Length: 232
Image 1 (cartoon, helix red, strand yellow):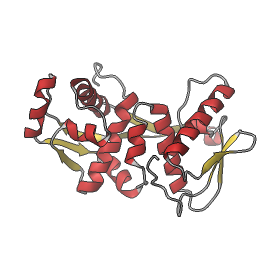
Image 2: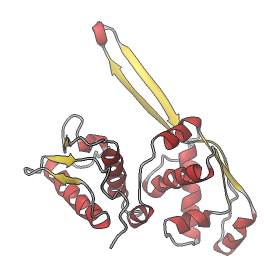
Image 3: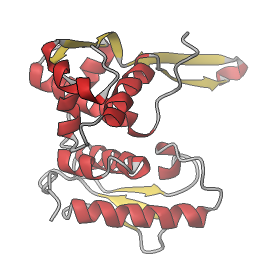
């Protein structure tokens, strides 16, 4: 365990999105790219020292991160554990620079990422039509970006059904998004309304809306609805 590396946060979520794009384009678990400038260009981020160092530190955090899934239950009065683990990368070879004046020289080296088999399998089997321009527009709003990605996934996999997801409570949208810092339900509802307005401005055909009593998010399938809609 590498105790000097913190857990992923904030714009670190852009890295798996970019890596997934590379994996689908290159059709391989072993991904090659010239420089960090490619990712910064992809999300329309400034190609400067602070953003490059943020990129490198984010890769370090993601490489050291392991995500655990599982349940603890007591069927038939006997304790029961069902756990699994997931990580993003098997290998990482990045050429590092420390000064802004050195940035143009990074492209002389080949950077290599080997994604885990589980990550590659998920990327290949569950493709969703996320719009790069929307991700770039939300790059500085992590919560809203999570909501957009979740919404595209939920719509795309709904297969014509209408889903009504409560905003709060067991199995709610609040739980699925991992939102834990809204002690008042009303605060979360107001935040969600703001997120939904922004997402709909970037994705006008977004097939989701709040229920009349604002207690649930109503979602229909985005199949047949323009899932990729650039900002206007």
